[in-house]
Structures are given as structure tokens and as C-alpha cells.
Amino acid sequence: MNEGDMLVIRVPASSANLGPGFDSVGLALNKYLTLEAEKSDHWEIIPESEELKVFPADENNYIVKVALLTAKRYETALPPCRVRVRSEIPLARGLGSSAAAIIAGIELADAAGELYLTREEKFKLAAEIEGHPDNVGPSLYGGLLIGTQENDEVHAISYYGLDFEVVAAIPRHELLTKDARNVLPKEMPFSKAVRAGSVGNVLIAALLSGDYRLAGKMMQKDLYHQPYRRNLVPFLEDLEKFALANGAFGVALSGAGPTAICCCEKGTGKQLLQKLMSFDPGMDYHLLQIDQQGSVVEWKSRVK
Image (cartoon, rainbow, N blue to C red; front, side, top):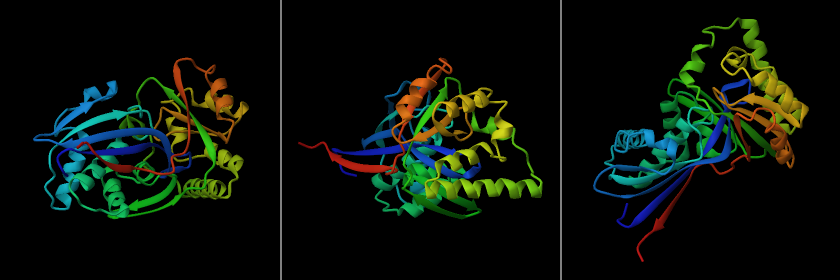
């Protein structure tokens, strides 16, 4: 990393699960975490978004911790940086803010430390840190990602042919992932697990074949997590009915929640957005597109 050069990293948000794709399916969305880093004599994080001001401004910042962990894993000393950080991704809302931070940290270490990691190596490390592949994968690869993780193995397939829009209904309160995890059962009867798996299988087949109406039906038939998390997100049932009656083909809790995504045919998102704004004025609504690039890293010279 040369003096005067600026490293720019952009990482998209993600929506995981899509209903029955629990801990294995995720979608990249066009809200971004952006870093601008330049060499310094010490670590300094400069938050440019109000929400980020609560986090440490030195090497204890989570992004820096991930970067230092990555460099250590590959036995490289990472030069300290001054890093400006801004984010469009709301914290603790189910849109992958922590996963985006992990990918940003790995990309920072890879570029500033000249590690030259492959995307597969970045993905494996990110999934190891996060614990599952469905948020970090889309933030790294973009598009739709279907993945599985067991012990030190992680496998995933990305798909870039989806052609629909998403309206995110974002409550103004947080829901921590650990709280949403605590309401899930430890075990599931075999027959129920078979049904849950079959619903997830049809969801993927429907998405890949472009049968979005069928995909939407499968989102409603999830048995893995949404039935247990409805008490934490009491508006979800009414939102489902309202959105489906006003043009959405499917509604799903985004990640652990409390955000819900309303999926609709291309070109109908603005109309759905306008109608949803009357559902609950206490929430924020955003029309989003599927990000097809994943994380992007650029060098910009500041030397004239």
C-alpha cells in the first residue's frame, strides 16, 4: 500500500433465508457499506454515518479486527490505515450489516496487505467468522447464493439470473440475531424436517426457473424459523396479507428480522412501495434492486 493511494471498498447488504432457505440462501441488495482507506501511522476509523459513531475508532473496531485476523491467518503484517466508513445498511435489522463488515475487513486486509486471496478463500474465512454462508456469501459474490457449511468445509453456488424487485419494510427498532436465535427449537421431528427441506428445495427450483409466484408460496410455507419468530415481529402476518394483496408475489422475514422483504415483479416496485407506505407509517420502506457484483475494490491515486 503506497503513500497517497486510497483504497475504496464497497460491500452490498444481504437478505438471508428467503423463508425456507434458513442459514443457506441469501440475496445481495443495493444498500452499501463503503470504506475509504489510506496508509497512516496508526489505525483510525472515521465514521461518516451517524449509526457508526457508537463503534470504536481504533484497532478495536470490528472491521479492523477482521482485517487483522485475516492478515494474521496469512502471516502478513498489515499497515495501519485511516479509514472513512459510511453505511446505508441499518444495524441489527436483518440486512446483513455484520456480514458486510466481515467482508469489508477481509477485503481491506487482502488489498492493503497484498494477500491476493481468491474469492473462494475470502468466502471460506468469512463463513468461518460469521458461522453460516447466507449473508457473507451474497455480500462477497452478489446475486443469489445457495450455500452449505459444515466444520471447515463451505460450498456455495451463485446465480445472477433473478429479475425482480424488493421493497424492504424496515422497523425503526433493532432485533439482535442472538435474541432471534434463542426462540428457535433445538430439534425438529424427522417428518417435519423432511417437509421443511422439500419446501426449501421447491423455493430454489422456482427461483431458478423464474416461477416467482411459486417461490412466493414457498416463502409462506417455511417451517424452520418464521413460525417461531413471529412473536418477535408481530406485524409480519398483517404485512404479508397487505403486500400480497397489493402486488407482491412473496414476503419473507429478512435474516433474523425485524425487516421483511416484499418481492415483486420487475417494474412494479414503485407502486408497491407507495401502497406499503400506508401500511405502517412507523416503518421505513425502501425499493431495492438485486446487486449482481458483490464486493468491489478499487485503488484511487491521490497524488497529483
